Length: 485
Image 1 (cartoon, rainbow, N blue to C red):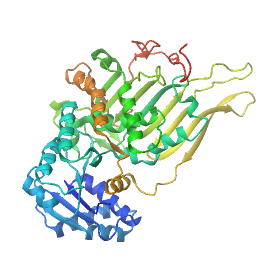
Image 2 (tube, one colour):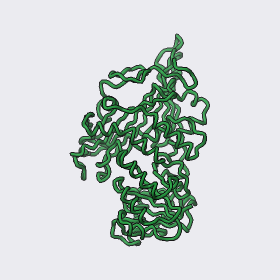
Image 3 (cartoon, helix red, strand yellow):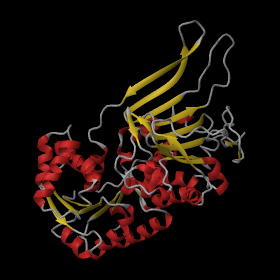
Image 4 (cartoon, rainbow, N blue to C red):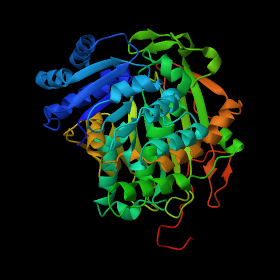
């Protein structure tokens, strides 16, 4: 286990909200000992005492559920260096010392290449590891270049491209529910599942994040990483094991099977929008373009929706819809698996047999199943819902990720080829949006998002789409193990 963690960008929001509480949670769980050392590096002209005061204040604010003694132990282990993360001499001074370090780049993606180059020249101690936050690069070309720089610095096994969604209990439960229940895996295919919604809708507005968000937007901030990772777990073939190679190979297969989007596809299958002024949670919210630090000329979206299809035997004919938005009326954070309707109801049953929906609630973490049963009147169908609240995890998501980094367990990190493939999936979308082929719609803050389109593409058996939206599910593909009809 590595016992030195260096955070570059240590005075930022990521450290305050997640990394410091994550370390305190590890300490409280007995996973960090007295020999652990934290080094913070940033542009702030602070000394160690000032950094410790700041860290204490952040833990008081964001780590209220953790034992105070654990937070004090983490703060006591901390030192601080004012440093330019792009200056090899500054970086060398930060990482100097005995034994390997875990270098956590809590930095904007645009700074990653220069920071990695500085680490290379700083001569990292043998056995060190590099941690990068999402998004990995800003487009496909920058991701390829960043992977090249990292390959010159450390082995792939020492690179942790972290996505905290993968450490969430419910996200991991997607695999557990599928693979450990005989009743589900046989029907986990296009013959039985019509569509899957992967949604992260937030009632939060910009909340002071313009410095990062206005250069990223909803597509890069959420869809390219978090939501595509969820797609991989929902759609992947059962892995031989949950070891890092088996799991990541199967996720890569999913990304490679995504049907490439043409310019015309992007116009039909994607949406982008940004919020205007409105009422949210009983308060007035300014338009996104009126938020401090926003450049309206960038045309940054706060809402993104992408509809994908997979060209493989299991999923041909199922629609996967990835959606995220800010400043919406309500939070909706879930994976919703929509099963196809029953083919026939016996005469004498009245009412509607709604298709079943299996929902993995991401925040709060729940599991529910929409069913149809008999209501108060005999032979009359009525909706039923089964709901289970998932037990709180032993460790919060960032604590789990930090522990994996220190232990060298790369299972929940993103492999280099996987990161590149995710950019390939969305590069046509980015290009079409940049060219203005998809209009930037608007929606009032506090609403449900942009208005529904009057037409949507409908998948066909041959893989083509037409321009009308049908109320009936697309014709199912043959189940795995059976010949196509």
